[in-house]
Image (cartoon, rainbow, N blue to C red; front, side, top):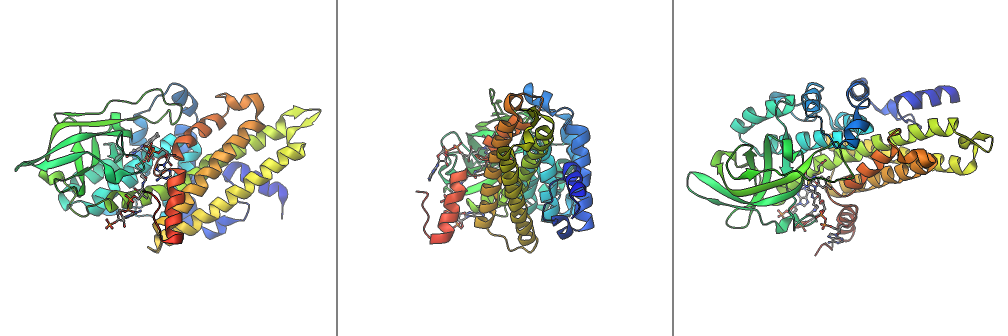
Length: 398
Ligand code: TGC
Ligand code: FAD
């Protein structure tokens, strides 16, 4: 083994301690490189400023669309990328090396907006919306969470009734990524019998507003808001007919949670690389802090955890491609990899000392972002309980 070669490769390309690249196809590596280059050019030079200013750069949406970041795993018929799930994961990893908020934009658009339209929508809906969403001409959002129903979406109160020539929608959603800028929302609401359905609600319709959520310390370069429906008339043809019940939104979440399991590795990689470089340069007591055993312990443990997370994500990608992955497996990967990334970010912040809290380095931004990532798409504990149910056969949610 050539140590110099390994460390150089690590620094510029990514962490690959177990030579996992040999498990990837040339196409997968090419796709990864393309997003890595995109992030270096379009995101990394600006992200600290965007995050400090709590600014969502709307023009990044069209650029992401051009880069194929929206629905890379979906069918090419309507503008998706036609790629495998591992490629999708690698793309999310590279994007989140840049910023979790940027990855959120892609996760929501691809897995939570385009995915339900492609899987549950009519041919007319697919043709009308998917090409515009894939290209980034339109931005979408996904409304499941409500003020009083987060971890338990089955209790949602948003509802609609059949008024002959239209559906009348009332209710509200909270914590919705992209909401303030979105052109359309996929909204989950109950019909008169209490059954959950997905509706496509376009911006501009009377009674529909999207107030922005301010004062976030996390995902500051991503915009978050509410969806408020006050007697909104939704055309009947905007109902997603292909699947109803809570299983419909949860199916979308499986796809998005898979992307997060990969994305979190990217955030951890960026923290690790930044810290390794810093620790080799920063001198205390007459030597680089990388020379201290306690720093080496932290770095060694981080590398080990990142490598384990990579293996988990890679195996899950294979299962997804074979159509064999199940929800508890996805929960294990999302839960483990996000917690791993958050722990790495916290350790890295310590190694950088005071500098770790500044915007000169990406660590604190990643760390704060990951506090949202560990909460959204099912909290750390909800995923633990999904695993608990799979192990014991006994649901413990209620
Ligand atoms: P439960 O009784 O277990 O299930 C209800 C029905 O759904 C089926 N099901 C699934 N179907 C497909 N995929 C899955 N992952 C599924 N999980 C369950 C289930 O078989 C059942 O079907 P049926 O036919 O028998 O009716 O439901 P429950 O009410 O007990 O809840 C289970 C629980 C707690 C696991 C679930 O509610 C949950 O996952 N809660 C977490 C909520 C969550 O993740 N919210 C995310 C909101 S979106 C978001 O955060 C986006 S952030 C985006 C970004 O910025 O990146
Ligand atoms: P709660 O459900 O109130 O949970 C609070 C605490 O109680 C958690 O620690 C939880 O684990 C614990 N808890 C709850 N139930 C149990 C139980 N049965 N057993 C043990 N512990 C339990 N939602 C969307 O629909 N679309 C979006 O685009 C979206 N984007 C988001 C963006 C951001 C920045 C954030 C922060 C959230 C976003 N969410 C979105 C909402 C997110 O999915 C919810 O915050 C999450 O599901 C948790 O719901 P909650 O915040 O209401 O917490």
